[in-house]
Image 1 (cartoon, rainbow, N blue to C red):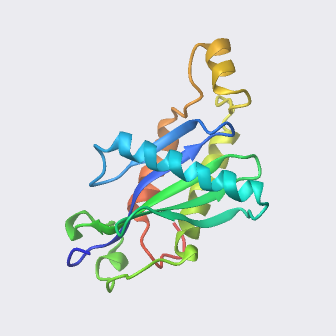
Image 2 (cartoon, one colour):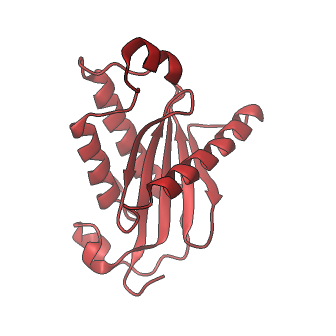
Length: 181
């Protein structure tokens, strides 16, 4: 881990009921790694499927898999089948790019994460998603991606700037040990 850095969110993915990406937010220094992060999110969906088949699933799936010593994914499943996946970069962001939250700037080095460290981020993501669903101008995905494209001529991706800005805020504010976002 770089001196003075703390684990940080590298990517937030909102995945639909049919395993189609609804929203992906990338964070520094991974902004230019969209294809790699899409692959990481897609491979994490296999863990959701395995746990669903084995009936060993809860809303908070915790660690899905550690890709290497730097990246790991964590998952959350809503009761409507929407999946939230957060990729954590254990090397984090350099201190200059660290969260604006002053409490996070001088944290001691983190050697590992507990599943509960991600709970505030997942709760904030879920709250933002619920607020999106409450928007009368947003139509949630109810059909398969192909049916949606055929019927409307557009994908089911979330295009709300308010939602995108909230994902960016969550990704930048989170750090291990934060109680609420």
